[in-house]
Length: 391
Image (cartoon, rainbow, N blue to C red; front, side, top):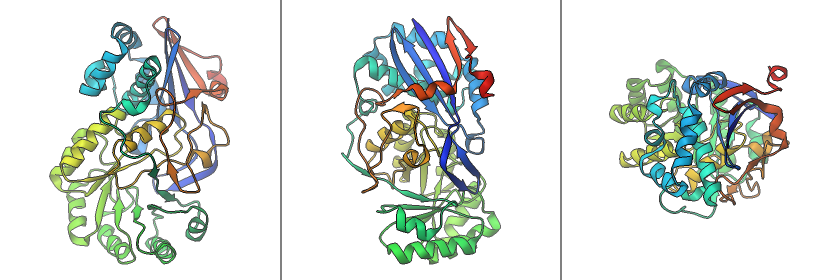
């Protein structure tokens, strides 16, 4: 018996999250459950138009045009241990032929890949730590703290520590950003790395003077300061300001990474599982960045709701040389979650440890059903009885 169910999770957040590219007060994730002969795996993607051009609607439509029969046929025909070995060796795209799928964007691949990996983990009673080659590097990982525009610098320093790495979301007002960084440096000293994320809000004309001012008050690097893929302007910014540049929205695909490397446009890349097309693609991207002498961060989409969280942490534990790891703020954002057990962050130390259990270590709970929008049986997708009331 083969079944699938799609959930569009738009769960209200207890606190909002604001930055120059978007203001978020609800989650916006797609969660997919795949069930084969009574065993279920769940996956997730978090499409953002301003990041990859994808939306929940566009990914849903692409999924509707994807043959789940082919996915289930391969899952049924190939022993799970052999299939996992193939995925580790060649990637999801090669095994499942995503180049033949209509509109196979990175978030669609992420959604299906995470669900397939989780299903294989449950079938093999295997944790996600074994989805990637090698062994996890550390038993505990420190995580960064993000200061967005919904909270002041003083309150942030007073309430969000201890600090291992600080990301400051730029405000669009350079004077405010300078004051914010100055407060953080005065309170935390010089040992904690501080990065300002401009979320594509600077221009080639403002970037160099802004970067110089921020560097003078203690910023170590800036993230995605210019419109995406402004390769020449990014190289010019690095050379003229002396500041280190991390790219995020500019690097969604392997081709983007190669272009950034060739242009000498950055010093580091923010790798996010949903943005970069799944766990396996993200792992290969990190290998390429490392080979090119570039650094990387393990990042998150704001308001991830389930498997993406533990997929990102799986990636992080396998790459302990990351500049920093973002563990997300699901504990702050959501009073309840659609998965159990809910992913945790030890807020007394701002650290995370590997999850327990097979696959990504979670299951959908009863809360998820209110977000169900489509079910798949016998080769066809059907609206759930809740779809009309949710729309």
